[in-house]
Amino acid sequence: MDVIVGGGVVGLSVAWRLAREGRPVTVIDPAPGSGASHAAAGMLAPVSEVTYTEAPLLRLGVASLRRWPAFAAELAADAGLGTTGLEAGGQESPEHAVGLRLAPGAPPGRGLDLRADGTLDVAFGADDLAALEELAAFMDKLGLPVERLTGRECRRLEPMLAPSVRGGLLAPDDAWVNPRRVTAALLTALERRGVPLVRARATGLLHEDGAVVGVRLEPGGEVRGERVVLAAGAWSGGLADVPVRPVKGQIMRLRSPQPLLSRCVRGAVHGSSVYLVPRGDGELVVGATQEEMGFDTKVTAGGLYELLRDARELVPGVTELEVADVVAGLRPGTPDNLPVIGPSGTPGLVYATGHHRGGVLLAPLTTAILLGEESELAALCAPGRFRDLS
Ligand code: GLY
Image (cartoon, rainbow, N blue to C red; front, side, top):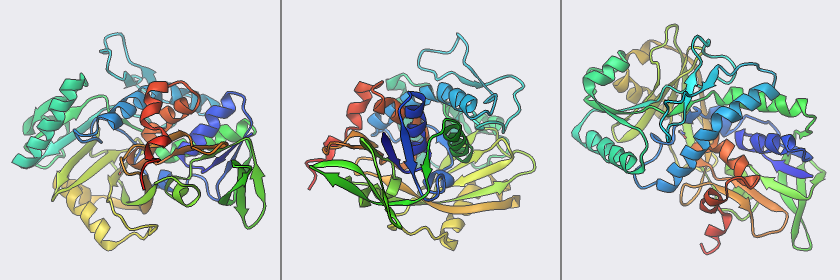
């Protein structure tokens, strides 16, 4: 049996794919779906989430985004959700395009709320424009589609943008999904497959003869298995020797009677990056701070102030919206911002952690790596790369 420690999007996805392969699995988590996955905006945005120095992360993200349509369709079917509101892209899609498109007439906000209308990254000043041009040149070199837009073209796409926007970059294949719906669907799919969920906290790994053979639980007891898959996000470093640290993100959900935006919009304001993600159900997600504060999950006045101040620069109308939800989550950061996926140096222990800002995006790829379907990309995520770190 495989014991999956962690019931976020990554852990639940791994459990679900293994269960679909007919493997016996058990999931351990005191409150599944309540950590980083609950806070996450769900951006499936490999192009607009990277900087031009992050080619390996971009490769992982693009590969995982390609897997999302099939992953979502299988998950929706397994969870009994019916349509995901998506169909595959047409023949005319260029080879590198992901090909996610909303089915004509599909009601938004249903199923997993997977949408693929691209990300518009906007700039206000000369420095921001130069940074966008650097990113665009990087994408051109890799053959990934991006469109350079003037301020006027940006506002034609998104009329609620501030008049001071001077230009932008459209990443047409970037997409997004509602992570809360994804975790709920995964939990339903796992229940329908009879996968046990142990609602307890794993406090340590059980070792025997140099191998990991299970986990200890709080308030007592243990679960044993042939393999332990550590998918405990920011808490992974407390359970095993893996360099994962918490990176706090505060995020806000606003409620909009009429959609303010039709695609994900982001931009750099006052040196920090802010993004706005419209949901099919009328929510507008505004995120996120990036703070090195240990395991602190307090929502602070300063954090919310920064988010609102920056979001208002992009889209002045946000201040009219009702606040629906504010939350802080902990991203599992690693020294090189790449996830840690695959066998550890210890027999019986496998990692699926360290996804930092990309857990939702990278969940399908993570399952594929663990099932041996992506050996080349697996090398980028190999846990062994940190063994020489002291
Ligand atoms: N992926 C966006 C974030 O971590 O804030």
